[in-house]
Image (tube, rainbow, N blue to C red; front, side):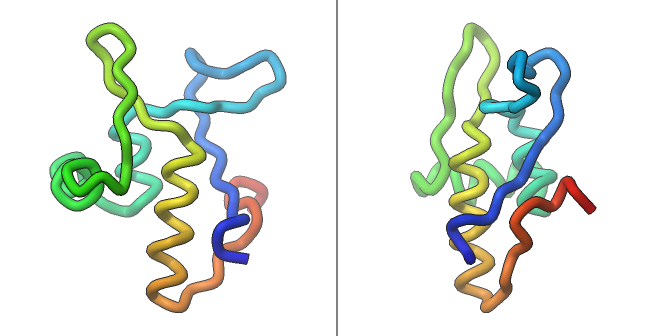
Length: 88
């Protein structure tokens, strides 16, 4: 399953009409990966594992990239992720 795992983040101001969210804040990405913002920068952004998207003065990341990174980390640890963690 690994790379097919899907995480759904909710941020009302960035929701599309169909209810999907494509970009999330760095705080939300850190929460999804179980770390803080500093760790997110140090371990994943500065190493190129996660790419920032600058939108004006705000930086966001693509949910798809966070999903990919989470699947990679889980696979490395031998963990199988569920398809959709928001359904539970």
